Amino acid sequence: TLNFKGNVDWHVDPWENVVNGLATSSGSGGKTTAETYQLGDQLTYDFTAKDYVFASANYMSDRFAGVVERYSESVGYGRHVFHTDTQKLDLDLGVGTSEQRVAGSHHLGAEFIGVFDGNYVWKISDNARFRQTLHVEAGQTNTFVNPVSELKITIIGNLYASLNYELRYNTTVPAGSVHTDTISTVNIGYTFGEK
Image (cartoon, rainbow, N blue to C red; front, side, top):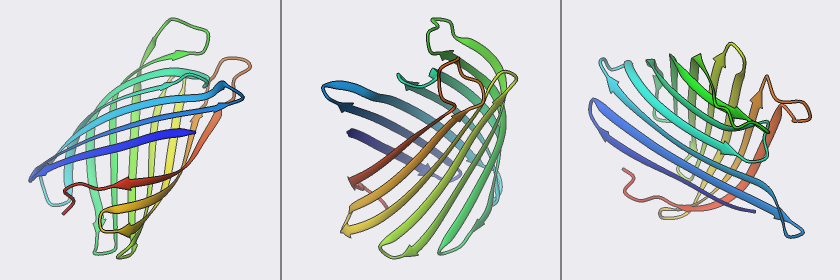
């Protein structure tokens, strides 16, 4: 299994822009058994210390899933529910559109969606951090649920190790496809320019 995960965060009050990417590939016996690509961008504007608006765009490709390709675009309102020295929680609620293609089809079906995002971070110690995110896209024909759990441990300086568990669930998939896919990874990473 090979995987790459990257995140770029640009922050100049009251604006913030976060771009993230993911690529995962697994093989067994000379055959590819999993292949996933993901790219996302979210721009936020804080209009008070607690409240913000956002615009986001996401792309996901999963060659072996029931839904093999998904695009989504959304806008909405977010709230910094709390932000302490050790914990923070942000919640987003918005609307948008989704275009997705199921396995065995060449057609992208479009629909309006409601979007919910949750982002919880717990600083366990100076060297350990836990993050739990939840992304939900709910439309008339399909609801996509995507929680991701990450434990990040500092090794030395900006070098860290992380344990990740991701679940992807679609309410509607073609016959013969599973509703739930999971990805578990162990990573070594490096942080550039973190405050």
